[in-house]
Amino acid sequence: MFQDSESTQSTAIKLATESSFSHCGIVFNLNDEWMVLEAVQPVKVTSIDEWIANGTNGKYIRKRLKEQELITTKTATKMWQTGEFFLGKNYDILFGWGDDKLYCSELVWKIYKRGIGIEVGKRKSLKSYKLNDPLVRKQLELRYGEKIPMNDVMVLPQDIFESDLLE
Image (cartoon, rainbow, N blue to C red; front, side, top):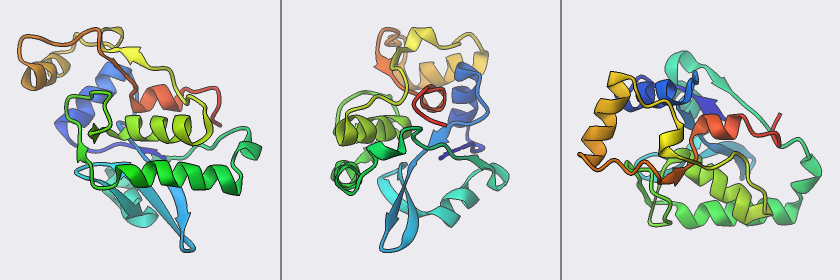
């Protein structure tokens, strides 16, 4: 699931990725209820209705794996167990790649990679995004100071959205 919010960080992400959304999560059916596992502060499970309401004007886009046969009971369980491991972890405002803190698209990417062994979205270096906008530059400076880690590799919502594995 992909959506947008009104935060300054959201605007910077949309500008840097030339996207109309800045947040994503992954949907699971838990006890016959559709829930979204998302990395906010902290990583948590949110009802799908609440998740949609948290976005700008309730707008969202959903995508699913093209090869649905990859999602078996066994792989879905492994995907949930991967996500469950991250519950309660802090949000990673620096977009690092460790498991101690996570950001939204990192969580989704890791669930697919560790759960069924596929990479939904290409990881890219920070310098590969559009970073010239003054708002984007200001957000980078606020987070990193003068030493912006241009070679750090990350995955942002648009990178997952563009994955050939999703429809």
